[in-house]
Image (cartoon, rainbow, N blue to C red; front, side, top):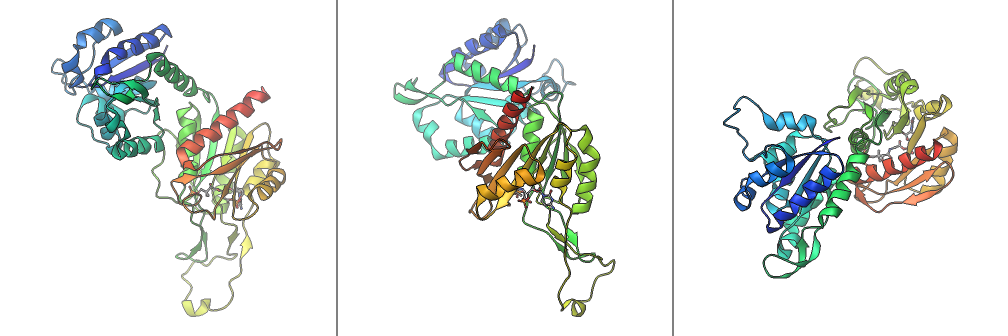
Length: 397
Ligand code: PMT
């Protein structure tokens, strides 16, 4: 039995929230309802109290229990947040991080998967601002049950009707199952660039921001895995609950990954390890006059190859950053590094690959099966990649 938090906002379709609540209860889950103050003007919290068997939360500050920080306590227990119906206003608040009532504050405090079922007038749901807000949330991993077309409360026909309660419940239960799909597994992810120093101030590196690897780590956490994130230097905010291991150079990264490899079930090598380093790095800043000649470089260790050679049942995922012959080059890397899956991205395309919020990839498994994805946010792509990894693991067992 999981604790599901049902956020209910002020739409005329609010009555359907009762069926959503019942649907989750029938599936054996406990439901805590949060009504926004405007929703509480449409229906009494007492209705949801009697259906849920729990006191409905409306106010951010509870006069009866002024010492309890309820949104934080509830955030720790919640396995899923479903907002149905969701107004344009709550979607905008979530997208902007505005926390001025219990529900919007809870959204920021909770780490659980989030499912939103919007309900509003057609002009509002199709408004570029609303679409923009929804896309911002999607990029952060929030999922939506799109509203349906039909008769609307304002008397119009069009898009904006709340999806049917059974559809919302089904999607919610899918999310709940997925939130445990990697439970018990240890996932080792590498992310970001490495820096290969010439002297204390100069280094060779690349444009990797770490976003792809961080999103792979975030999605693994959202699926219940224990995650160790070995990261090169980035400006990204590390996912909460991941064990973060900083590694600056290829040699550091190799050491940290090899140490943790035996206890890992799945390894995702999204880092862009610099291919060359400077042998005999100087401990002192080299005078620029002394740098005028050719610089000697040497290849860095191939970490992924070393992991492939030591593989004992681990599922090994590599990335391939290519500008030419994407598929053929990626296939060669599967064999050379003993991978189970490679995620090949074309790093010459605009708006994808290095230091972009979006990416597009070919997912090629060791059996030669190729799946292409459209351009999507790195979070959404990580979801596709994890679905493929899980399907392959399912076939193994
Ligand atoms: O970090 P972002 O800005 O979000 O960008 C994402 C990304 C483009 C960096 C990412 O999607 C990606 O493609 N990562 C792999 C980059 C890379 O080094 O590709 P490669 O084709 O050169 O290497 C193949 C694989 O071998 C990679 O898994 C790489 O981590 C690994 N490798 C490479 C060199 C090396 N010395 N040791 C390695 O382990």
